[in-house]
Image 1 (spheres, rainbow, N blue to C red):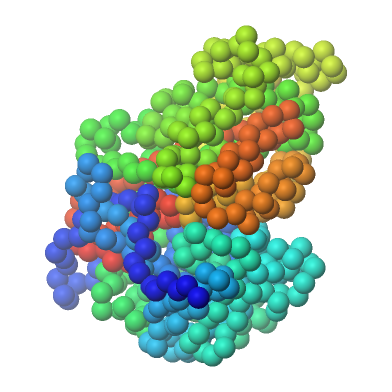
Image 2: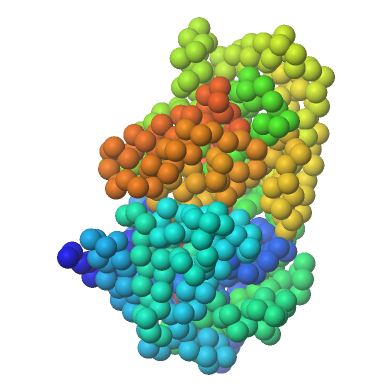
Length: 559
């Protein structure tokens, strides 16, 4: 039997903002942070139902999983102000892993309680994980544990009862997790909000349990006020085991996706931190020293609905006609890079090479083989092929007068990107595109119902493995909103889950992505790999941002 003991686990692509410094806040002063992280009203504060940063950005301050992200003062890169993030024990004090039986045994801390004083117990983790995979919960992340934890996929498909999930609590302080396959990123996964413990006694029969006053927290902060469509206020959790080392007494998240108004509030001194700024202000903010840019594990892409765009050549033409260099250079202007793959630069192969560097321009590879007379390394060549493919589709019956809608969630940047795509499709293909912005709170629910031509979304992973993106799509994809399915794709995703990390698995993952950009696909149109732009009060220290997770954490900030 082989065992591995607990050790601090560093995030290879973690990064962050500002080194620790001595506090400038007097002992008798309240240390508060007012932040606008670019999101409007969250559609839910239920950790199981989390679908994006609008919820997780706040939940990560209130809830804690078996492991957690923490700052480290070790500098990374060339910027001395950067700070790496690491995975450290959270609610778990230690663990063992048995490679022979694929079993993790976590030992919970003795000093962990909820904010109302109720002990945190292993069975609360069991309840949360079973609730996640239960198809009756209808979580968008219900497939998160598929092919990872024993029986998760079968339960999610309605073939087994949630009680048969490979997780059990032999006693209050011991959690045993049995994997279905070896999973190199499992510890990173336990930081996810969906895998944090939940109180069955609080949730069931209580429709308002996510509101201030009834929300139970086992993490560093507690929700004390939620003025809907305005702000959420958190205060230190006096019951938290690391209470003495926490930073701000109070954190207020202002619920606004207006980059313009958030910037105005920051510049007037009302906000200490904002993320996301209007593109036309980036140059001035960089010159003034107010703007910071950090890497981000995120890909922004478009869904091309296969039920609306039934001809693959139309979808391929749309993908080719978009000028990604223009988007990153003149629209976002924030250090983002034009996508050549669905997988962002922060994700690496088993040998540590950036995924896009390893696979090359996979979005265009198959088309280049089929149409060798066009130079697809150049935007002009891509436009020429786009026009050729679109004309072929028209000759075979596609209506050239088809008007397409473009759905996007409200923000200044998203609107500007939509306008850029609208212009490209009009100029290159003569397609009329109508833009439709939807409030962030109901956006994913709206596009999940289909009925659109084009819809924008961005997705960031909480672990370093390309499979996380491939899990989103195909017949079993948790974010498959384009209506696309492919049997070979599904088979290869399932196969990759059974393989250990290594070059052979990398080849399978590459084959999976290649299928997405052939005549059997083109339902996903990657735009760019995102970066993280923010402005922060110069006296604020110790704010950190794990690039792999994609959230800003203020718990240990100082002034």
